[in-house]
Image 1 (tube, rainbow, N blue to C red):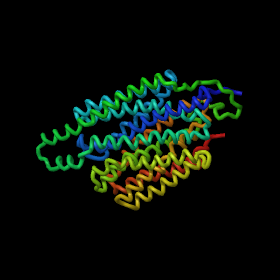
Image 2: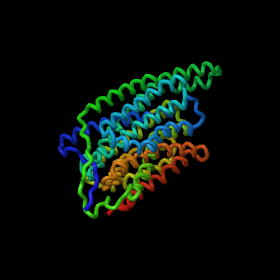
Image 3: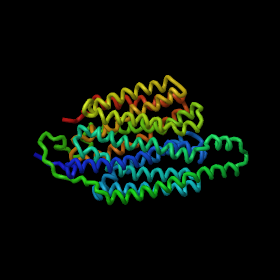
Image 4: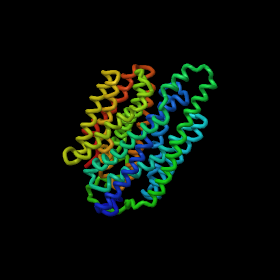
Length: 430
């Protein structure tokens, strides 16, 4: 017999779980609101900072999502010291600091400063994600974890639908008129004035965001959120964690981290990249600024389906298989069509992507025992896929046709996700 430290819910009562789900659900709303502002920011900063290419514009997502790669493991260390509730409160405060940096960035129209603010926001979110995802997985049976994460996904995507609409309405309400003025005005001083006025519009929303995040940090610190405890749990000789000394001895976890990397890559590409794809086909900014919300609306539909079907009708593995197959079908649809039909297929990728995170996460951390926290941090590092895949698309579209660049970035990812759903999640499990 051996012992293993595992995270367990502190009080296995329905009241405690309901309270925890409500609080974590609200946090996922905040995640979504901040994360999916990036779709509008890409197009806004491309105009305000007069960026020369889409590759530069996609550094918005690169700066934001690379924070997860660098900060996930340190986040797990911080959580061991602070506990989950204090750690998440700290994450909200860090996000508030990142939002404040938008003030000098807007005043100077400095793209590097904007990226710095985004990286700091991502830093705070990496701490929140490292805590909240394993938390929501362990407050009930692992078999229904995908269902609970689907509820979190609904909170996340409702916010994601709302946030780009709000930001684009504030920042890009007269985008077409401004673009025309910049193109027709020969006086550089007049152009600078127009851009400075537009840049200043971002200050108000991000000041409000910083204040709200700071208030939420205090409220969470004082909330009744139950704190998971590290317990000594007796396990049998056949336990998955017996004779294991590190997370590198769990193949299904490592394959799951790569699966998360590729999944987040295609999710961000279909959500934040849909506007750039439309612009490349000649669609006006007045229309493309709202495209992100279409993808997120499709994801919302998928999450609702997940709540009612997992695990009662289909398993997490089946949901992942179906999602990967849909991703392949819709990717082909994007490739063989054009115009608004292609945009519709990109938006439908949101439906294909919706149940991937809820399914991959519990499959990858199942039976990790004392390695649960570190394994979760490794999965959070995989969120860096949102930095790499869109940037790859931005680079490829400069050398090959737009629709082909998009297709090349999507298909390998969905094929691997299908492999993980079929075989990868079983590798190394007893």
